[in-house]
Length: 101
Length: 101
DNA sequence: ATTTATTATCGCAAATATACGATTGGTTTT
DNA sequence: AAAACCAATCGTATATTTGCGATAATAAAT
Image 1 (spheres, each protein chain N blue to C red):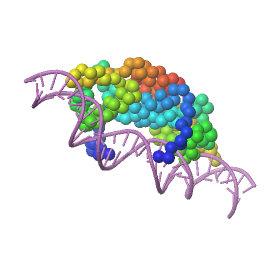
Image 2: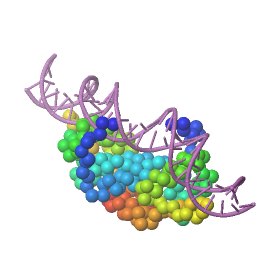
Image 3: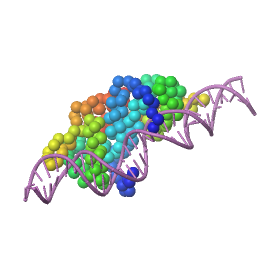
Image 4: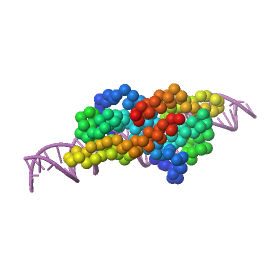
């Protein structure tokens, strides 16, 4: 990509906000989060039934949401229960609402 | 990419929100928008001075923000004055705040 | 009409994202 | 121990994004 070698120094919060936004930048991930908001929690398998996507694809979207900190997984063998990460959700909420004035 | 051929049908607003989020999913674009919120408006050249990025790169980021509807450009020959698109900004604001409960 | 100033677009290269099937890794049940 | 279940990861293919320099486009000033 021929990146600028120097890392750009952004204002406080800019990169964090961009990271959250990026994770929200795909309709499937928005839909997953909406689903989690309704159900409070769910298993990967539930989502595979809801969306016409392969299990591996769903899993990948969940990983991105987890990496961004928006959800967390709890082991409920043999399943994994995913919930919204309330702490980071609050941070994201306040960053977005501050951003939009 | 081997996409699903069928287009997934999402809930109302999901794709619009994802589109806004995607446009916000890069720190430079967040920074540009923050700059526009402060200055109310600015020219491409101003941003080229602020960020250590090539003029073409800045222009491309502006294009994405414009395509997403978050900004608009007004011809002030030979410059172009960019401002936040207030209508869509309000829509984005309300979509995000509804999304975050 | 030429030059200057400003911004957009083109063409390229490299990184990332999206999707899938197949495989692997854990855990529970048999 | 073997089989079954569920989810993550691997490998692969393709699409998109990000970035740059070079070039084109547009309008103003000379």
